[in-house]
Length: 252
Image (cartoon, rainbow, N blue to C red; front, top):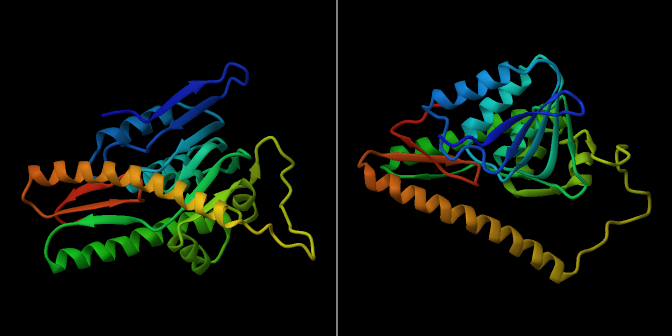
């Protein structure tokens, strides 16, 4: 088991900080009782306020769900600070903050969960149902934090929406921007957002494609290694960055 988190003591503030830097779990927490217990035990030792530094492209949806719940259940104030990227499953973790702040240069990304599935027609239908329910569970977290309508959030997820600091703040996914005056940004009347040149739009699409290509290549490698080891039906679920395997039926 590879730890993807680290608790440290801030000598200046005497408060505990939790660092997430990289993918949220290289292996799924589905069916894993040891890893969640280890995280829970370490978190239980923290008394008082907790600052979470978050820089992650996403990862296992079940790990993100459990981390979200554990942080929400923490007795002290939880402040989440996004200093790099909070994409996919990592954006769910960001919603756990009593206060969530984002660096001016950081990004958030939300999108639909995705899956790879093997088996017969019934297995495919179950995978579709699972994806629908996972999406609804993710919307629950976004809705609680942002107070946007479920339909609006669902559309943003389906469109795979990237948010810079100002957009994330305006839409309520974060409470403020680090190192800045955290008043809600309201466009002035009579002004329109700057239109992007075609080259700028192309660059953004290429950057997004590069990120997705990286994750899908990693997913495919893991997928093939798992399939070669078993003849059982295998279903995978992720929030895009990393696919996770589940043997047989999957129950969330």
